[in-house]
Length: 153
Image (tube, rainbow, N blue to C red):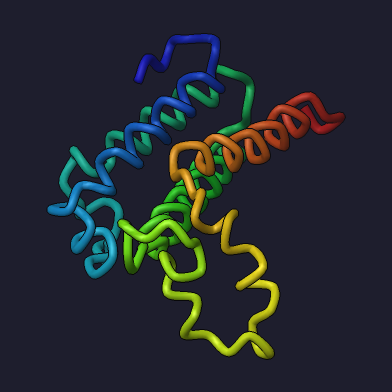
């Protein structure tokens, strides 16, 4: 990440996309899901704290206060962890199947109890993790731009 880049939005998008690529690596997934960081921040290896420092530097240079930059970091990474966990749940039961209900195993769900889930089978089957990440980032970053431009700043 280039912390001196005035295009902080592009830098945060890069951080998010890089995090997603790393987090979806089959060797990393178990660590991400089962090994939350329970060590106090100051006792963690410097390599673990550097991304926090870099994002804080990027955002304070962009005009966010230190406290707001920390909130942005938490919101961004909270979103990213949630996104990754959602993406990992998008398992396809029968990838070779062409019918979306069968492909996703939705036929196992009682129609009368899950009509909306079954109705959304084509949308569920068309899941694209990278595109979903971009949509979520659009929402998050638009809010941050509005916050930065607001009267409090």
